[in-house]
Amino acid sequence: MANGSFAAIFPHEVTGYIFSLLSQKDRIQCIHVCHLWRQGVIYWCDQAWRTTQLRLFDIDSMIAWLADVSPIIHCLHIDSTLDPSFDAADIQEAVHGDTDIEDSMRNQQHIPAAKEIPTHLSKLLSIPFDQLKSIRYDTNGVNAEILQCLIQLAGSKVRTLNIQAIYQFMSKKPLCVAWILDQCPQLETFIDSESVCEFVVKDKTSLIPCRLENLDLARQRFDSKEIMFLLTKCPCLRRLRLSCWFTISMSPIIMLEKCPRLESLEWCHLRYGSPSFYRPEWWRRRQVTYALDDEQQLSSTPSTGLRQLVMDNVYDTDQYACINTIINRHHATLTRISITLYMDVMRSRESINPIPMNLERLDYHFHQGAQEEIESFIRPLVEHCHHLKSLSIRTDFRYADPNEVVLPRWFFVAMATLHALQHLAIEVDNDADDMVHFLEAAADCSIPLASLYYHGDWMTLPCIDAIGKINTLRSLALSTHEKTLDTFDVSILTGLQQLPHLESLAFKHHENGFFQSPEAFDCLYQFPCLKQLFISIQDGFNVDGIRHLADRQPPLEEIVLLDLTGDCSEELESYGLEEALDYAREKIANVQGGRVCPECDHHTRKYDM
Image (cartoon, rainbow, N blue to C red):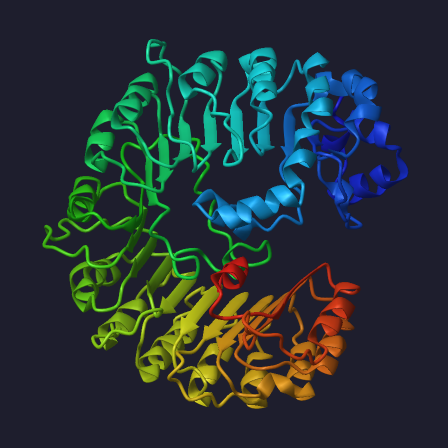
């Protein structure tokens, strides 16, 4: 069994059962992949050993045994991040200058606890990882020396290196990217996510070309000379993603000219993103909802041109002006266009001509008052790109605007001709009758819609009836504008119960009182395939209904219930919501939520509302 072929011979079901009978030592000798984690607690499911992964909690006591099996380890994942109780939102606040939070973290002794971690991780340097192909390193920054030594020790065969670092509390600097590329001559994918530090390259003397194809860098800011040096050093680059908090002082057109083999360009400004607007909602990330092909992975067959253009939070007028230029130059190969616009960047640009006829995914997120974008950018693409599989059109409702954007009827008529459409997200004001027209056409024409996120006046029986006829739906999310009159009742839920494959259901709306009744949760209990539930309301929940839903068999896999009547400025009387959620945690693997303050970004961004 120690030859590593065991897991490849038997079906997963058989493998999972046999692994459950083996000791931990025998398990790792039967598989190829080992994930090493710092000491901690992870809750295992019954089928944990169907995968080729192992998490070790106590490296100190198992170091000798680990050395014995190290020759068959292909993947190493070291997690030495801060305590899991350490709020990620607090980390980001401290990163960007909130000294009160940083001092609080120090007072809670999170940093001294983290400093103890290198003591046992350093023992990994004595182990011969002869077959190591992939390293993922999650750290708070104090382990940079260990990472450097590990790369020197095992980097010659590594093809994937993923560094997720947090340096804000330390004076440590990230490793020089050029040095890493020289140490790892077989490296094909390199991800280095540190959005606080600035430098990328210390040593610009190394001109040895590398075989890197996938480069993903995050920094506080980028130096154009450093980026140009890296692009020169990476002639085989096929995917480039740059994320930073300040201006990227380079034109994306120049990058494309410098990298003729580039298939995917992702350009992200972190500083101008709204936590609630620009990030994908929770249901777009969960395993049982729809999954587009992993667009971070490169296809086995190289493309002859740019396939994916992602411009996230464009706020510079020059960058805005070049979007259509890039689309026109690469119209023959583009399959994905994802654009989010920050406020007030509009100015004239050339029209889209010719149309990218092979487009499969279009995401266009823009601010209120940009009605002309609907006509000039979205219309030609929606009306002529008949291979679209995923379409997301959204605006920002955080700010009132007298010139609110409205989706015209032609948009819904055009969508009815998209016979390959699988994933649709609409968060723009619209006429509910137009949406019903599309939904009815989708059912009649057998459009294979698997996921729908619809923001609009859906609380009408014609709309619910039309949604209920789309039998291909696996994920459904419905939200209302605050000005929409809430008429939520049991007939809405019973109308959705007939969807035969619905696994994920989400509601975001305002005060109505419906979920204060046990009947609402009894309806949810009866959804035949439901696995995930998300409800965000400015209202309360029926706690007995929550307990009843928690007893459902088979149990839900995930539930998020947010009561947005919290107020951080005052202590509110509890009505038993937390106790009901605690009860649900005994029955459901992942339970989140509670009574939170809707005005407090610290709360809302946890749930990507």
